Length: 433
Image (cartoon, rainbow, N blue to C red; front, side, top):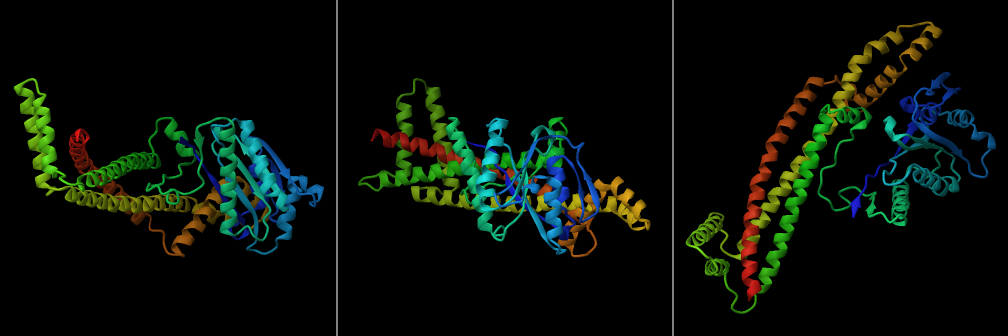
């Protein structure tokens, strides 16, 4: 069974971060909406990529809320507190295994069943995946229990269940899982979110830092799964052999290997083959002697040591991977802040209201990026200077350490392959009885 891509995130639209429910709704629907609260126009009509949008109202809601501008301007006017949480923003990935119509049908069913039936209002939009940030997106007016982690978990699980039921209905051998790698019991490194810009560059054959990092992470995960599989198989084999050898008159590990190669020599049709068998036997014995593996108990101890070393290496990789992701984002925001600070300063120097409004409109995208960068840097630095050079040096150091860690997997794999050969030889003898 194949595991398909799964993404389901919920974020708050907060006034304390300079966010607007009207602006978010305009972006989702690809429309032009005027915010009465902020006194500004939000025009996303040229954005493109919006396949459909619609508003869902519970029975008790006023019918005029079907108008998008009326609905979200009402929300902004009712929520007067400067730190008000205006709405919740949902972002769900379209399932490639389903048609566009099936994705839309599932989205409508989810909104109606888990939000509108609870008395909530939802503003749904479906974005074209070929236009960058494709997927199922909607804003919803919150109720009192929305901030609870259990509520988000219930939504994520419900969407997962609905999609898997659709897969089963269509006879598809594929599923999604809303749980994290840790909760699934998978000791893997999560990949970095690339975003539409990076994906477009990679599709054109332009290598990026995030693309390179994700390729390294995927290769490392494949290697970790392969090694873990081999370790588990060897432990299983050892348990079987120990059970077999616990019976009376069980031969030792050396006896079993000698019996195997004697049997091979008996069937050898030339002196050259017998010489090759002798060389292989000698190499196997030398390996066991060098590593002090003289019994099945010592073989099990060796496997435990290799496993512990692998887990330590895996933990180090995860720690470095997490820090590299964090540094990439901080460096990006720091560079945005430095690049766009003159634009923000120029805005503050304008005294006339109309000139100021025109400047804000002309530089809307740059100002939004600046505000986002300033907020993130403040959260991480608390007003301290932005250490861009230090961050870049740390990132380069971690990248070098990645390159140094990767070759350490090779000797672990070679150890496992040699122990597997010993397993094969012993199994052949035990099968003959």
